[in-house]
Image (cartoon, rainbow, N blue to C red; front, top):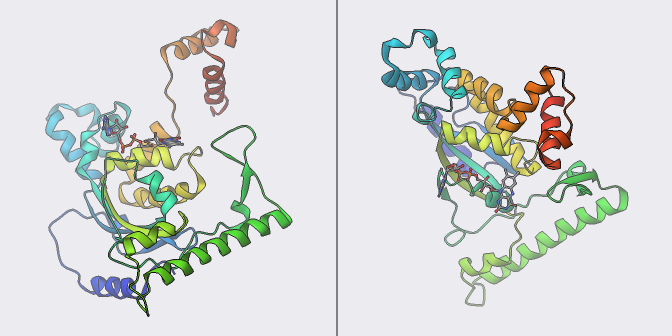
Length: 304
Ligand SMILES: Cc1cc2nc3c(=O)[nH]c(=O)nc-3n(C[C@H](O)[C@H](O)[C@H](O)COP(=O)(O)OP(=O)(O)OC[C@H]3O[C@@H](n4cnc5c(N)ncnc54)[C@H](O)[C@@H]3O)c2cc1C
């Protein structure tokens, strides 16, 4: 179950308590407040709180640009200008606080994003639930033959079934032993902080994660990207959908300049100029390594 009955009751209670406010609110975001969006088999993402909207970005930017910025006077144009020119601080004026339930191995990747504030469920104080991530059958992929960090085709038939059986059996056996170790029935009972070390990385944890929009967009660029592992990518995609409703102009600019755009080195740009003049440019005469050239071709190939 994504949300426990206690959490659900707490949310229902919080929803009853609405207050008029002078603060700016983002209508697209209000509908996400307290709503848990399911991710993976037991996980979720929900917005606990937020600050700011598209207008907060331009409001902050205009402090520095003042009235003189006629060329970028409308909000969307200004946001696109800021994004295009890597002005980060106006985007830091918006904040988001999320409650996330996620497998521990996903949390290990996520926590590498150091520019957020995190408070995690304590398995020293509390007893973890018997909830493990078991991939859907079509997500049970083989090791990629070409990419050490990637996946190949989905496992099939008996192999897929065997893997699923082992994942379920191993996690349940580990949890049975966890419960048996912390039990105080007829024994002292091992401390929770020690007993948890036997649990697999597929067990779910929860945290509050607060960050600003600039760093959130950076997180999305890395984790909603096709190179990110599927299990963190689905969280990033859920957050991306929320962000699109929250700050539509900033999200669109980010999609355009960062997610869908590409950065070219001076050498690559020179190759483009030579190509436009009709010169035949190859890897050998490009000055690029094979890897760089492959990526460069990928960028040009995806051009619409
Ligand atoms: C596809 C993929 C594969 C990866 N593979 C690996 C791997 O194999 N092994 C591994 O260890 N990690 C791996 N990572 C993690 C990656 O190297 C980063 O640690 C992670 O993505 C966080 O990025 P970040 O540091 O930019 O983010 P944040 O920590 O949120 O930082 C945001 C930005 O703030 C600045 N910043 C933050 N802290 C500092 C600081 N202390 N000093 C200077 N600048 C700072 C940097 O500009 C940084 O880009 C992988 C990430 C991805 C997306």
